Picture (cartoon, rainbow, N blue to C red):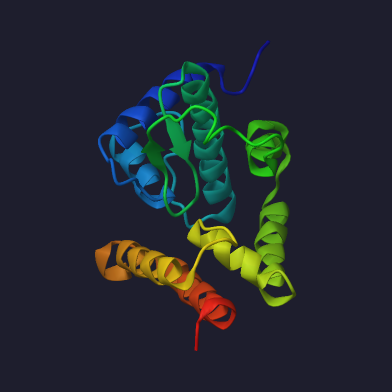
Length: 197
């Protein structure tokens, strides 16, 4: 079968090497920057200011990450935690970290049609729907997703994760002001739901 990703098989190896070199994990931004600085030919070497370029780069990386996670799980060699703010290799544990029966994000990123058929207007709509969720009823879930946490978390874990993300994404350390604003907004929301007051 001819696939958009057949020529990019070694992208998985590049990702695996970078993640092995960073046992504490990397953010998506750090991973993309390291791929670019290593002259990776499998992702666009264009400025990420353009939203469509950003989407396509993000999609290619996450497609490769989910394929890598599936491979590592099949080999029983490691588990790959995947979120935009932290991507990290973890030890393999039989059964405990098995793939869920239906992982909607995995299904999305493994469907090549989303890369091929998504326009700039679609990207704008995706961003708008995220912020709509943040403001209408699903704000807690969206904030937890941004932090890479689930609803079973507790307030100390949220505070710790917040400090980690602020440190990691602060503009003084090469991070994005927009990303930092999103992290701060998510913390305000989680404060309302989890703070012991």
